[in-house]
Each structure stands twice: as structure tokens, then as C-alpha cells.
Amino acid sequence: MKKNRKGSGPHRGSKPASSAALLDLPVAKNDEVVIDIIGMTHDGEGVGRAEGYTLFVPGALPGEKVRVRVLKTKKQYGYAKLMELVQASSDRMAAPCPIYDQCGGCQLQHMSYAGQLAWKRQLVVDNLERIGKLQVVREDTSAGETCVGDGQDAGHSDKEGILVRPTLGMSEPWRYRNKSQVPIGVTEGGLVGGFYARGSHRIVDMETCLIQHEQNDEVVSRVKAIGRKLGITAYNEETGQGLLRHVVVKIGFATKEMMIVLVTNGERIPRLNEWISAIREELPAVVSICQNVNTRKTNVIFGDVTRVLWGREVIHDYIGEVKFAISARSFYQVNPAQTEVLYGKTVEYAGLTGNETVIDAYCGIGTISLFLAQHAKKVYGVEIVKEAIEDARANAELNGMTHVEFEVGASEDVIPRWKEQGIEADVIVVDPPRKGCDPRLLETILEMKPERVVYVSCNPSTLARDLRVLEDGGYRTVEVTPVDMFPHTVHVECCVSLVRT
Image 1 (cartoon, helix red, strand yellow):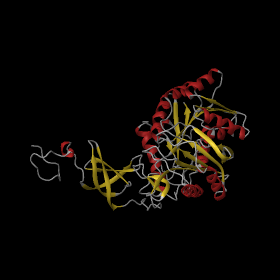
Image 2 (cartoon, helix red, strand yellow):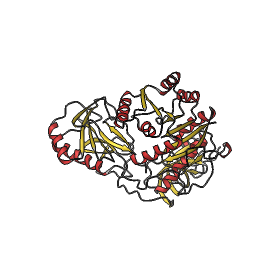
Image 3 (cartoon, rainbow, N blue to C red):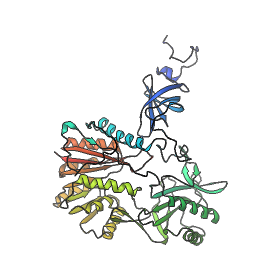
Image 4 (cartoon, helix red, strand yellow):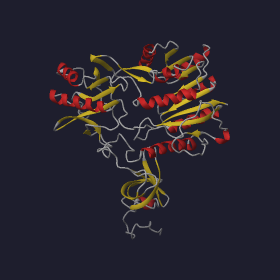
């Protein structure tokens, strides 16, 4: 007979063996073990090993020794709950947010900011090496080493590999978000709005969020109070009844202009004039009040119909010297301070002298395109969303930029057509969604043969995959700069310089 798993107790006759025993695992459900945390996943969970068996432990940090209780086991790995810090990391700190443990919005508040920046760089390095099979330069990444000179190849040969710079962080990594999207619900006390409790759709009321702009907090709080006073009903996900689904607030950091979007389950808003009057009286910074109608049973926030209830259709903000009009449905980067840092790095890696033609392959409302246009001879932007292109054209006009052209369509269809028309790009910039570049776009880039490619990424794993394709097609990844667009969360953006070999 096979020996029992260590620590499982005596054999119990005909009683079925546990799944851990059947799989011959060193731990079983409800076992408590002390383990060393050797890393952290892209979701911010600590990674430890019990006799070689991997356990994921939410809340544990690299370098810690912890006592955990096993919650679930699978063949290759399991999940455990942190029970006791036997030895804490020097990066561990008390999360300043009082509802951090309940809310799923942030994942890293219990880690020092310097620790977060170092971990995000390492996350990028790990993906480049593991997924992209790319060689990374091993060098000192101590604070103070930030950026490369002129976007050229920085003197690194193929053998030396890719230089991954330290993550560019914020001097004040709080209150950075310019957009708040708050789900609305109801309790015995009336209308509430805040966040979904971790792992559920139960809404917990919230008055302040430390990564939101303070004025957004104030507006959401006032709108909830006005709604309660006027007897506005909240949408119920289960029954499909009730009116108010979300309150969305946007603020221009540079202009201080504010917009409120009321997302409703139906066209009619009772006591609308009273609501608008109260908002205008209590919140003078608000210059636009809009309604978005969403009657579908979905967790998608916006529906298809948006109308202005009072004031302007847009608010304005600046990234650097470039002015942008932001509508209720416009996509606009939520951290304008770090967006300027990211786009500045994009311009640097593009190596622009004022004589280049640039193609922006996922241009959105033209944010990167117009930023690049300050330094380029000609910029072409392409985006599949028609409304985004309309916004991009309006933003180009707003800034008097006549050397920028935008077209609706898929990049992999439009760019080859441009090439047939004789348009040759010196630089192609891509800023794709989390799923990365469409394979046909990568083929198109390899056929266009621009001297430089600048890849702006919000997902290190798909970035690494796409860089491998470009490397195999004749490009060399020279340098990568991670940028911390979302402090205290696990997300990291990257700007990447590639040159044609």
C-alpha cells in the first residue's frame, strides 16, 4: 500500500482519500504551513512553495515568510489564505485607504511605492524573457537612472540585449484619476454609490477614494445626496427595475471643468429640472450634465444613446500644450500627468526632427497623434471606432493642426491602402488594447519597413508576444521604459523603441 501523505494522519479504512492524497500533493485543504514568498503574479498575489508545490497567496509580498491556510488544491498549484506574517517585507506598509481590504479597485496599497515601481519593472522583464524569449540587459536599476538620450539605439549590440529602464513613477502617486465611474444601488437608508465588494456585485457605499481627484469624490457625494432627496430610484440588476445605474464624473486637471453623466435605465428622469437646478447651485465647477440611456441587462456601463441635459457637450483638458475636447463617451487617459510622461517618451523613441512622416495605428481620439504632430512633418491616424475619429478630427481642428489626417477603419486594412497611394512612414506608432496588435497589422508593419517602430503597451504579456514577431521580421528591440500610469494597482504601461536592422 502507498504511504500516506506526510502529516495526513493515520489511514482511515474505507473513507475516500483526499484529492491531495490522490494527487500525492504535499498539502491538503485546511492545512496550515509556513512558506517563503518568492515572487508575485501579474494580479498581485504572492507566490510561495510548500515542498516544491506552488501556492498563490493574496496579500503576501516577495521576501516574506508567512503562515498560510490552504484553501484549494489543483494538480500543479493551489490557493492559500494569509494567516500570519512570520517575517514581513521591508516594502510592507499599512494601506492608507480604510476600505482597501473590501474594495477591488487597488491591489498594491500594502506595498511601498518604491517597491511597486521595482516590481512593475521586473514584471516587464519576466514577460520579455519568458514569453518573448528576448534577452534583457542585466544592470543596476537603482533610482535616478531614468531615460535614454535621443531615442537612438543607445549603443547596445544584439549580444547586450534590451535595456529595460526603471519604472517612471509619480512624485505624488495619489488622487491622479480624472474620471470616476460609480455604480448606484439602494439600501435601507436609501440611495448608495461606491464600489462593488471584492468578488461580488454588492455595492458598498463610499464617500472618498484616494486615487480619485478630490472634486470627483465631492461631486459623486452631492449627486447621491440630491438623488436621495428627490426620491430617485436605483437600478436593480436582478429585477431590471429602477432608474439610476451609474454616476460618471470627469474633470479636466488643467481647466478644472467638470462633467456629470447620469446613466439611466430609461429615457425619463423624474423631477429633472429640480435635479439640474440643485447640481448647478451646489456644484458650480460643473459645466456639462449629460444623460446616457442603458436599458440592457449588462455590466457594460454605457448604452448607445447620450444627450446633453444642460450645459456644454464637452469639457476640455490639456496634455502638455495640446488641448482636447472630452465628451461623455470619449476615451481619454485617466492619469493626465503620467500620460504626458508616456507620450514624451513616445516622441523621444520616435526620434522626431520635424521632417518625419508618422503613422499612429490605434489613434483613438488623436491623443498620441496630436502630441507627435508637434514634432513631425506629417501624421496619419487610423482607428476602427467612427466616433473616436470624429473626436480626433475635432481635436486637430481645436489645435489648428492641419498636417494631421485621420481615417476610420482597421489599421491592417487602411495602412496597406495608404502605401498603395504612395504614403511611406518613417515611424509607425502602435498603442493597441490589452489583447495586443492584430497579427495582420504586424505583417503590415514588416511590409512597410519603417525605420522605427514605437510600441506603447498596457499589457506586458501581449507586448512580449508581439515584440517576438517584430524581432523575427527584422526589427531590434532597443529599449523599454515602464511608466506607472495607475499607482497602487497591478497595471503597468510601457513605451518601447524598435529599430529596423
